Length: 90
Image (cartoon, rainbow, N blue to C red; front, side):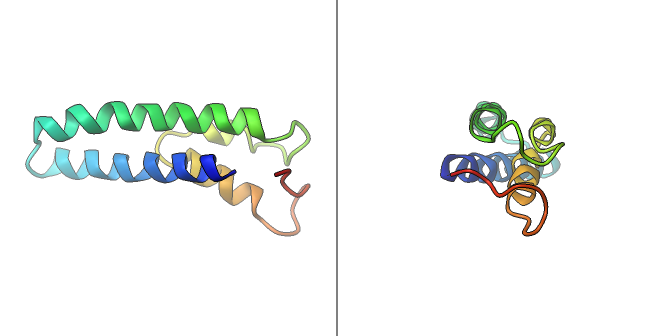
């Protein structure tokens, strides 16, 4: 769960940095570093979600991981929602 939280945060922060860079100065160094880091975090969120969430979690939890940029946060929110579905297995 901790790895999923870290990957979700990195995914969101790098997306924000890439968008700010695109809308302002468009520095190639930021894009060259931020793009691969964001892509890796995006893939890590998907893999960690499918690998760590049990099959019997609330329906829709796993597919939310493929939403670009905020998929990890959607999964974490879904897993930590009290009173809905089964509790997360840690």
